[in-house]
Each structure stands twice: as structure tokens, then as C-alpha cells.
Image: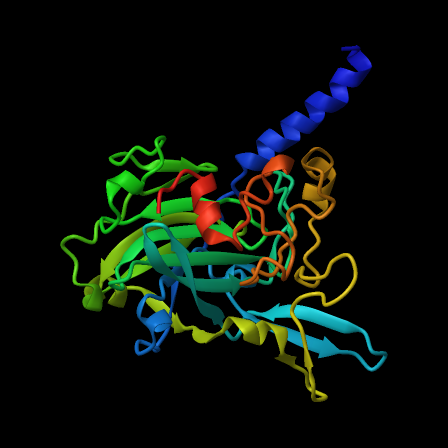
Length: 329
């Protein structure tokens, strides 16, 4: 390869390396982490709703919020995340395999932004960013698997529980070691064997700025009481399509027409578009999107950057998605 061609390629590879390992510099005064909890313990979604532990809550971009629709007098629509009112959006969804029928509890939260950072370089900077936590239950209502990822389909991680038979594990899984997921250390398994689920909750610890999941564990009520906490409102996932406006009527959190149909409004990721979009063959790579319950709705929610694996890794067909990643449900 000619030297004039090597330099741009090496530069792109360097940026991608920095982005994949990037962690924002530690603030000098971040305060105590803040736990977001719900008072809803009656519904199935409420019983398994994780506690979200947020690093550096003094920065508003770290606070989970509620999507808001504002319409200016000139008709311009602005979709933003209000960090003063925390909401989490949930839905139950079933899927079946040859081994049985399972229930997914889908939880979705959004943050005002992932702030731009050059040192270290943050390739995922953008607005209205979100996280998905999916808890898969067996027919007895026991949690088998926690699936976590951003609402763009990136930073996918799996954390099984002791209720899941080891025969269902992918061949590459190592049960007794913590797993490294894009520079974050997560448990290889959640031990529910000696826990009373009625007196325990799963804690999901989220990093500052990048909103990456840094840890997951099961905590008892005494441990949870030690956290500074704030209430988070549990809402239906479909309510994101009917955000009320001050003038009356509703607007959708997602684009409803055009080339960005199904994508979160205002969620463009310029860094990922420039550095990943060309080789991933997706101009909208990294943009947050709707997680539709039917494959014919919304954009393909692929979780692998391999262009030939988009359908196989599509989160909308959860059984096929698990099979693609090696899980034997």
C-alpha cells in the first residue's frame, strides 16, 4: 500500500481504538452516586425493575429523564430529555423456541446527551441517548438472563443468572471470571441461589458521560437503603409515541416518515457516521432507534456491525438474536 493511503487508514484506526477504550476523565468532585428506584412493586415489570445507580449525578447529562415534545410558534418541533423528571419505559413481550416460551421485560431509559469529549475521544457523542435492559424470565417467572445495550444497538452485554442451565451458555463463556465488555468489567453470572427475590433488587451501575454499564449485582434492602435515591416513574413503552405538547395533541419520540423513520428525533451521531458508517455500510450507524415488537415495524435493530449479520443479530426477533450470539434457549 502506498504511504499516502496508509496514513489516513492508520489515523482512522487510531481514532477507533481511542473511542473503543475511551473513558471520560474522572471529575474532581462528583458527589455520591444517585439511585433511581420505583414505588411500583405490584406489576410484573415493577417487581423486576432494576435500581439504576448513576455516577456523577451533579451533571444533568447523567440523569435519566422524560422525553419532552416542544412546538415553537413557527411550528418547529424540538424533542429533548427533561432530567428533572425521571421515567423508565417498559413492555412485556413473549418469545418461543423449541425448548419453551419465555417472557422479556423490556426497560428503556434516556439521557439528555452523551457529551462531546476529545481527550479521551468519545465517538458516541449525541443527544437523546438511551439504554435498554431486557430481563428474560422462564415459565416459572424466574430471571434467566439480563441483556443490556444502548438504544443504538451497541455495547451489547449478557449476564446470565444461576436459574439458567449451563447447557444454554455459548461455548465461549467462562462462568467463573468477570467479563470485559468494551473496557467495562461485568459479572459472568448473577447468583440468585441464596437470595430472596422478594427482598432483593438488581442494581445496574451506569458510568458518567458515556452511560455505559459498569457493573450489575443483586442487593438486599439494607444495602439499597444506604444509597441516596430518587423516584423514577414506570411508564408504558408505547407512550413514547404520544408525547403530549403544551398546545394540546401529541408528538412521537421517533421520526414517523422519511429516511429516518423509526429513529429517535435529534439522535444523530456525527462521530460514528464519519468513522464507522463507511465500513459498516450504514449512514445512520450509532443513532438511537425504536425497539419495535414486530420485525416489520421500525428500523432493523442490529447488534453486530457486520453488514451480513444484520438480520441474524436483529433484536426484534429475540429467539434468533440469542441464537446468533450463541445462546441455546
